Structures are given as C-alpha cells and as structure tokens.
Image 1 (spheres, one colour):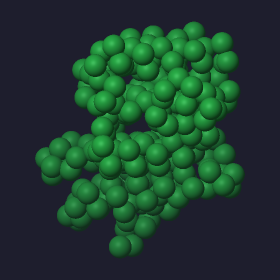
Image 2 (cartoon, helix red, strand yellow; image 1 turned 180 degrees about the horizontal axis):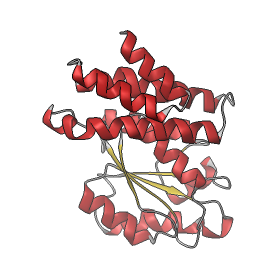
Image 3 (cartoon, rainbow, N blue to C red; image 1 turned 60 degrees about the horizontal axis):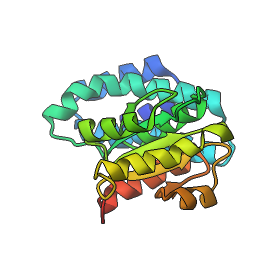
Length: 215
C-alpha cells in the first residue's frame, strides 16, 4: 500500500513530522493499526537496523529514524490496546552498576522497539537487584545488561545470581552486551545470549520471545 510505503520511506530518512502526518492520514483512512505499525513503522525501522548492521548508516541516522518512529507510534499507542494488538514481548534494559555509558543501551532499546518489543529502560548504574525487581514487577521475559567498562562486567554475573535467588531464572532470559563483553564471558557467568551489536540484539530478543521463555 502506497501510504504505508511512504511512512516507511520517510521514517528511514528521519522525517518525523511527515511520518506523524502520514500515520494520522492512515488512521483517518481506516487502515488497521496493526498494518500501520507493521508495514509502515516497523518495516522502515527494520531497514535501518539492517543498514546499521552493515555499516551503511551510522548512529545519527538511527537516532533520527527512531525519533520519527516514536512520533508515529505515539499516535498508535492508544489505538493498539483497543485493537487488542499485543507487544511482541517485554524487555527491561539498563547499563550495569558503576557504568554511566548509555549510547549502546539506547541503540539496543531503539532497535528492540523497532521490532515491536516493549522496552522498560532502567537507565544507567543499575544495581543487579533492580533488574530482577523490574522483571518481576513488569512481567518482562528478558533482562538486557550493557557495560562499556571491564571493571563493571562482573555485575552482569551478579544479575544472573540475583535472578536465580529470586526464583525467576527459568522464566527470564538474560542478554549481555557492550564493547568489552564476549561470548566466552556470557558463557562463564551463565547468561543466555551475547550479541555483538544492537541490531543483532533486537533479532535475538524477538527470537527468544517467539520461542516462549523457558522453552
């Protein structure tokens, strides 16, 4: 549908105002909310995610595209609940205790939202028990931990331990990432998934939610 293509294309260019107008037009024309979300906003963000993964676009382009997506999504949010459209899954994300870096975390959050996941952003310097509490209270299927400093990486292991102590380890998957983090470290602390970049993280999260946690 031409209108949905226009939403996708303008989102990729980061034209937030136009995206908002086109989304409103699509709503007024009676196009289903699910269709506007999936074939307009999410398809556009998916293209940006792929390009980012292939180094064809960079952080500034992702930021403006995400801003355009959020402006369009804001119009759809109240209608999505009425239409009974569920999120693809729910994730809580934060940078671990002692670490104040948030660019990587914010990129992962945007990519995940661009895949239709609901993301609870816990911010930076997040204590291990805060992740677990948020996952329990908000009903998150995935906890995502980010770190840029090697000195703060051990806190990721603490998150895994706290989830075990709280008895939710079989219900929640733990994803880790950040410049110093490796697959070997992920295995060592008993986390579930390591991804090297934001776009892959979003793909992995979707896959986990589709499989059903604990499966």
